[in-house]
Amino acid sequence: MRKNASEPSKRGRPDPLETLFSTYSPDETAPYREIAAFLRELGYKPRKLRGGYNFICDAHPKQLAKLASVRTKGADRLTFSLRFSACRAPSERFQKIASDFIAKYPTRAARCPEGACGFCAGPPEAHAYRVAGSPRLLCGAYALPIPDFSESDLEEAKRLILEEDAYWRGKR
Image (cartoon, rainbow, N blue to C red; front, side, top):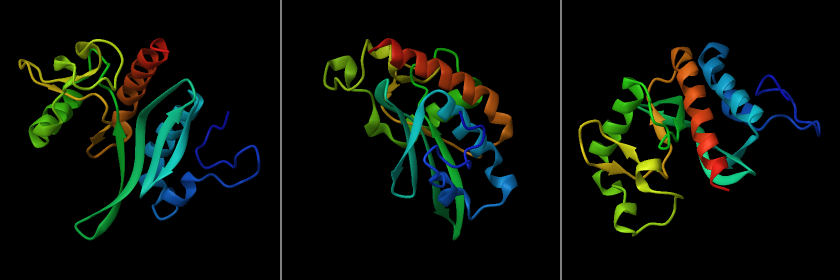
């Protein structure tokens, strides 16, 4: 396994993520490189999309994470999005991310309780984002943007990735 997201692939081609990381300083890319390497160790491969990469594995067809470059207020910045809807105990920070997303995008409410979706496997309470103290559910098909992703988020992000990965691998 590659220890660094920037190491060449087995076929000798440069890593596709280097295109994404190349315009940023090593300090800016450090947490993103580490999370990309962790995802790859679990078997997730980056797949190109507009402005970044989705991480998907062969064991299940679900997107688990996304790395992208976005332009905000005239400056480019890296972003990390994570799907953690099947996780039972995210920290307050990650619960707030889900709650804020639900408030910002009310049309993305989970439709699975009414049987109107069918995208995810299992009962809605197993794979939909929840708001603490509220019956509202957000569709779990989305990887949510993690604002100001940094080194301090790595431990929890890895824990959530492992939990989400185990959930989806168990559904196949």
